[in-house]
Amino acid sequence: MSQVNTKGAKVVGQGYSGVPGWVRALAVVAAVVVVLPLLAMVLRVDWAQFIPLVTSESSLTALGLSLRTSAASTVLCIVLGVPLALVLARDTFRLQGLLRSLVLLPLVLPPVVGGIALLYTFGRQGLLGQTLEVLGLRIAFSTTAVVLAQTFVALPFLVVSLEGALRTSGSRYEAVAATLGARPGTVFRRVTLPLVLPGLASGVVLSFARSLGEFGATLTFAGSLQGVTRTLPLEIYLQRETDPDAAVALSLVLVAVAVAVVALAYGRPVARSGAGKRATTPAPAGGNRQ
Amino acid sequence: MTLSFQAALAKRGFDVSLTVGPGETVAVMGPNGAGKSTLLSSIAGLLRPDSGVAKLNGKTLFDLDGGKHTWVPPHHRGTALLAQEPLLFPHLNAVDNVSFGPRSAGIPKRDAREGALRWLAEVEAEGLAGRRPAELSGGQAQRVAVARALAADPALLLLDEPLAALDIHSAPLLRRLFKRVLAGRQAIIVTHDVLDALILADRVVILENGRIAEEGPTREVLERPRSAFAAGLAGLNFVPGTLDGTGVLTVEGLRIAGHGDEQVPSGQAGVAVFPPSAVSVFLTDAHGSPRNSFSVTITELEPHGDQIRVRAGGLAADITPAASADLGLVPGITVHFVVKAAAVSVYGT
Image (cartoon, each protein chain N blue to C red):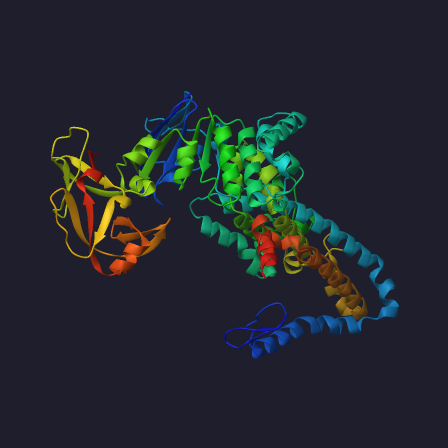
């Protein structure tokens, strides 16, 4: 299917690609920057000791804690993030732009700063901490603090990807549903949610991944108590001092989980179609071309 | 069983007052941006006007005039909206799409499904029940969308150019379908196609610049248009001005002689209307007292049936291709359009 277009440029493969050669070269460098360190780490793994290292008691405890807290913070992200995304995407109100920027702040904030902010909110001397203390609740340096720290950093991922999906799908289906007699709750359940399900799924996967990798905010706000707040990233950091082989092995476990999570979020083609109908229409049009 | 609607929206220069009688279908026509979609959206409750009152079958849709504002949300209005695009929910198959309205009204799943299958049969789409919208052609999807709108049992059906996005093979079938389902049903259909207005509607409303330019029975509006838009739909030349005996005096000071069958005093606003087929084209001025002659510059020549339509500014003449060739007509040359007074209808607006 090689053709020559009017300007004489060669059409290779399925269509014309206008990418200059030097751009391709830099793209290769970029890929190397990302992939090479991972490769270097994989090469450094002590495979003979791999299984004992990752199944040691402290490792399994940390992994279990990581999975439990990440699951809890992901649920929290869904419960709180879906309404926030819906309000940001569908309602119009004053200071909406400001709210959107503030909600996205944890994406660019150094996690340790997030940890300090949380400490001054929920810590013993914090804004809400003193009240909570009276009620007999101590959040800082507990497993709850881990979940809070993870939710703080992961929530924007869910909100961003869901708000994007909501904007892409538009409100026209919802308007039609309303004129057919569906009350807002029914529209949300039977139209809005199913339409943005792929966007929601990738948001959930991303926020789970972000929770799993959370380090700075957790260390600052929750500390590093084995079995209580020492999640897998904290365990890796600690092991690095005493047993580098264990740190590398556990790192590989996290890489494997991350790869699985990213594959889940971006691997499936449906995850990107978002709006549904509009994304599928080009297919028959292309088929008709001669 | 009527709709009474009056609303204004300053941002869009919209100010319309409209009633739809029981079982009446009204066609709304007008140029782009005339306010047709604003009208449907504010009836459906998707757009909130600045002021106005609307009632459907005695039930208030909105009342924004009094001190206490009433605004009924779309899902309590009973006004199903069918747009140019079918907008079938992509994650539901045809029968689930059609049963969406009944189920939202609380009808049990099984009953809603049975009703939906009946409506699919009504639109000759029972064979498509299990298909997803992505597996339907444009015409099939629009038929399912019609069934979905009707299944919701709306007190008023709002149709926003429902045939505009269909190919030439699907449109006639859908038009026949609409003819059947709209009979005796209260509906408003926004359309660009004069055929839809003639076949489907009892009455036509012409919107221009957010106002009603004219309204009346479709045939009457097309025969005696009082707005430039309606004259364009009917394919008639339309010259507005002030009445002057049996003629019309234009703002340029030109007098067009014609005949009128109603007694309207001179000085009032009126129009001279004549078909392009009554216009002859001459290269020189052939002046005669019972004739009108306009010196015009040709802007466009286009085939029109077996004739050539000669456009010059707002006026048009239909002549044979042979005559066009003999005269050597091309855009840009100045010619004389001549029309007999007997062919010009003059009436007040």
